[in-house]
Length: 68
Image (cartoon, rainbow, N blue to C red):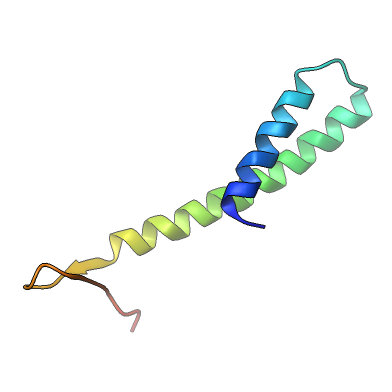
């Protein structure tokens, strides 16, 4: 599942939770939402690390730093 699809699903869950739904359905949606939120946060964290590891070369181009 992509980051974008996780965010879209989180929005759909939030919209459904705003409605009048049974407690069992709300709990299931909440649990699913937490799973998507954790996965999306991990993906964002990984992307942040990649951005922080970019190194500018003398010619103005960028490369990523190796993980040795």
